[in-house]
Structure formats: structure tokens, C-alpha cells
Image (tube, rainbow, N blue to C red; front, side, top):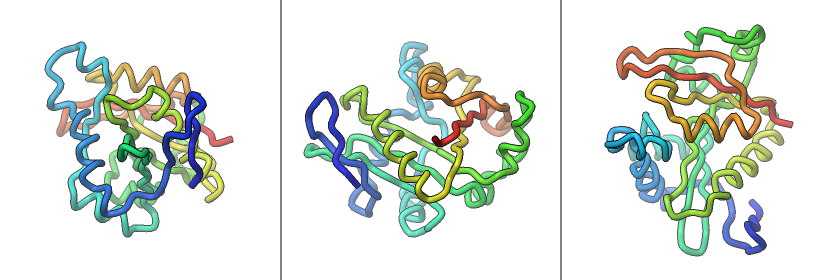
Length: 195
């Protein structure tokens, strides 16, 4: 993978994760854990609902339909993205198949093949451009592998306002909703065409 220039400096590169990266990924995810957000101000900074555990990360590292990339800088890993092929994700979590469409084409989109983006997360001290860089580079790579669209879920209740604003600004559109009755979370299902 190529090095990325942010604000004119060569600060990092997106690359496939390795076993050496497991602790960094866990640490970054943990810093965004919804269960640790105590105030509405903390919630506005964004959060993750379903965190990885070490076993799941290690499984992703040797499963071809799973994609785990880290943004590596001279100071270490500053962020990651985790995604799955549609069929692999539906085996892990069939709830996405129960999405209630909110757009006329939502069901067709969900029936077609897609890449399911589970997490994108960065260290709190990382440049504000790191998440955008991770996403842009990763989606470019996935397009070369034949993926035409990306599906993701954003918590609407509780509202992950930062994630919703970020994704809508990056040309994702809301195509449906679904519910996790166990965790009592309402999810917005978002989609982006890879161009």
C-alpha cells in the first residue's frame, strides 16, 4: 500500500493488519466503547457498540472474506478499518437481513453483493484527516477487488451523531433501519456506491 500525504507530510500508510497490530486495534476500539461514555458530550465524540475481542481479530487475520487494515505511522497504529464480504457478515450477524427499507431501492441494494464496513476508528490524538484517508484508500482497494458498494450501520438510538454526520458528508445515504432487541439499539443502514 502507498504512503499517504496529509497536510503535505508523509505520515503514514494503510496496510493489512498483522498479529503485531492486535493490541493497538483493541486499544483504539476500547477508547470508543459506548459502555464507557458517561455524558452526552462524550457521546457526541462518536462511539462503537460492538467491539472486537482478540479472538475475533485473529480470526479476521486469516479469513479471506474479512478485511482488516491499519493506518501505520512512525509513532504506531493510528487507526483501523474492519470490513467483511456480505455473505461472511450475514453468517456472523443475520440481523442485517431484517432491515426495514426506507428507500425504494433498499431491498435490491441489500440483495446484491456488497462490502459490509463494521468499524472505522482512530486514536483520539490522530489528525482529523486520518479517518477520511483510511476510508478513501480502503474503498479504492476494495473497488479493485470488484466491490461496487459499501453498507454500514450507524446507531440512531442512542444517536451516534458524529458518525452519522461523517458518513452523510462522505456520500453515504440512509437506506433502511433495523433493531437489535438484545441491546435495545436502533440502527440506520447506510450505503455508498464505490466510484
